[in-house]
Image (cartoon, rainbow, N blue to C red; front, side, top):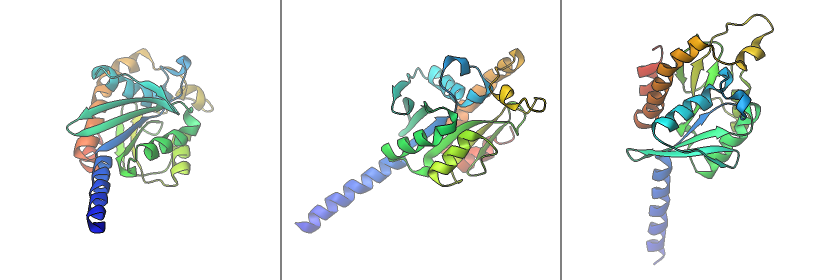
Length: 208
């Protein structure tokens, strides 16, 4: 009888672990509030909003952020837009990873990057925060630099001392026109990450 119960518990635990491996947390970094909606720093939010619009998803305000869920080919995408403001992004990321029992390797963080030309994309499995306060807090909270990130280039077209104004500034008309194609590609990258894995995604999209 004891061995039978052990086998049941083992089977249940195995099923839970398998389900966890099929769940992914996709985090778009940004700041909440209407005044930030169209700023360069909010590209993470913008990518997730685009995905949600294309797939007719609705974000719901929950603890530490707005959350939407999408299912495709047996996988569950959990989209998170933290409500903690950029500098405390790690708190929301850690909470939802823990709550949903999502393994760290199934996390993808979408962020703006000043070190890349506008529209350029780099998908990486680890790296420094690059001076980005959102990534810095995630690294500090998770106590690791080894988490997947999707870096969206916003360029560094600002004069000395104007960095904050630039990242918190709104996209130009020309940039907004070019963003349309990049947002479509960003959606493909997210799907590839979940369905094909991080390595295949890096090979397929980095440098494109």
